[in-house]
Length: 420
Image (tube, rainbow, N blue to C red; front, side, top):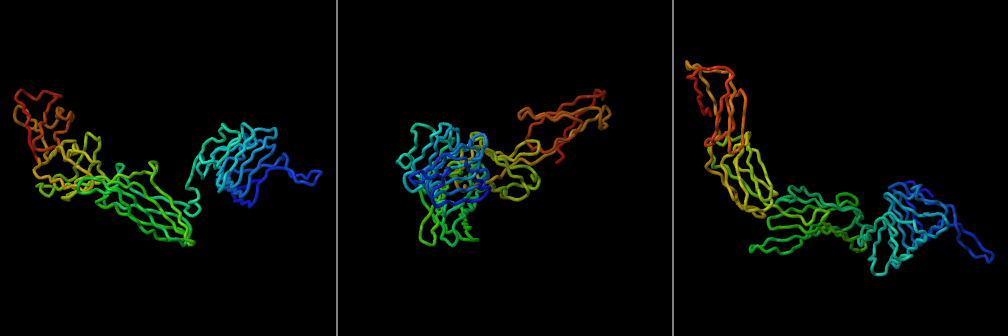
């Protein structure tokens, strides 16, 4: 039987066996040459009764069980008939044992096996009996205790724009779910709340989800100032019959718990001639965390930086294109939530250093030499025929070296001039 991307629902047992009638008129089952072929990711077979396979068809090399889902409510039985392995699932194939009572799994052939086996009930409570004991029947095993919830809640996810592994106060979390139509849905956001004493109390807020299309639900949650950490998000769906179904996002691989980062503003309103700093960078960094945030100075007086990790060793500076810095403030303490603004007042003005070279007679010489600008403290070096060093600040200590290409005379001079 080739499923070929379709769905097959069987109300009773599914037997891959030959049906015979013995001398007494009794129906018996024997070996067969039948085969179940599932190679399409959309293949889905639901067996409400038992699944029994007793066939000569060898399924390992043929890979006829390589994709799709085989769901069984009753027992699973694989009977050896001389050809091994007759049940061999591989690649993306899944078998789900979703019975409401105890299920017995018999795998007589030693080389037959499941690929991904999913159990929806606790394995340790006697819900599943594996025969023979002590043998691994699967490539991977998953216990999904929430499987039945998926019958009503088909998909669920959140969209979070994280930076630096945190969200910022004021950010919006987009919560979505697809499930049964015309149901009542809500999202429960569990979080830690920062108290005035610094302790974190656990709280929960309920956010109604709106059905914006058939079976499509959505809610928005805004991160407020009192939130320290979002621990998990639980989605509830109440169907028309009053049955409640839930799903939870809260695992580490799903990005939880979600830390709320720090927010700080940098106030440059007290800086005179601010327009001269346009195009330079505001740099806020913590060496202890090895974290750095930058904002380009555009002429505005207020700049906000979000998604910072808390630390006590932040350093703020204005950095030019050459990497020279000014207005440095050390040991800034930044904590979670919204911090007080960092006010920058006194600051060195941007400058441009121009070198003038003259000969014995005082005439300006335009060529015949190379200039080298040094800043040993910063390991900065600029070499070439250029006579100007831009993007520095008043107060920077710069050394200038002259390499002659030709004789200029004993009384030649180097003059330095700030032309800004």
